Amino acid sequence: MGSADVQLSSGIPKTTFTVRLNNLSFLLLLIFLWFNFSCSVISHNSGYDANPVFTPFHEKAGEIKASAGYGRVLGIQANASYSLSNHFALMGGGVYNHQTISTVGFFNPVYFKMKSHYAEGAIGYYFSLPGKVFTQVEIFAGLGTGVLHKKTDSDQDFSSYQEWRSKFKKPFLQISVRKSAADNLEVGFANRLSVVRFRALNYTAYADTARYRKIGTLITEPVLVVSYGKLLKATSQMGVAIPLTKALKTSSGTSFSNASILFQLGIKYTFR
Image (tube, rainbow, N blue to C red; front, top):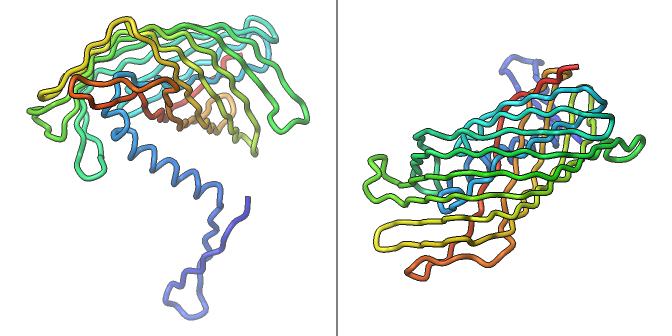
């Protein structure tokens, strides 16, 4: 990627400071700010909050990868994986999201009161592609189960809140690719295709409700994953959960879909 030079004068004759702005870094900063802003806006109207995608990227047999992170309205996530051989691996993890927070909306703050949790497990196959644009590929298939209880309001007293309650199971197929961009810097892309099967999906608001039982929706969840470090890596991911099936409706006829933002900052460590 290119870069730009910005000359800043200090007010002292013949003295200037040069700041180099890398285009990729600037773009990632804009994406970071947008996702931090929109996370509350989109997740405000959803009965499903997608858990962050775990991408272990094993390189050989006997590795243990452990990660932990925080996703703002998505809560705290922890994951671990173990490579059974040079090509097969197991992974598992979950999300704990019991918190009350205030976030930024388009015009007003959005308040969340949440008591949700989620767990998943998967088996995967990974392999390397030496000399290719993306040097590593991994494919995981698994099953998750979760409970969501979320109240949202523009009032911190929750006097006119919207409330979501759902219980669901989620079979998923996840494909991830990775490229080493520079020393200790890795960029990865992943897409998780999920079939969210709601055992119950309830929505309550002033003069409006929705009640669904045993209903499913197909959701694609593309994410960008950036990590930096050697054995201990700082990680970040940004993505979106996009429903591919028809939107649902409340009793008043208002359409809603179970879209959400995936956003997380965390760490990952490799035990060898």
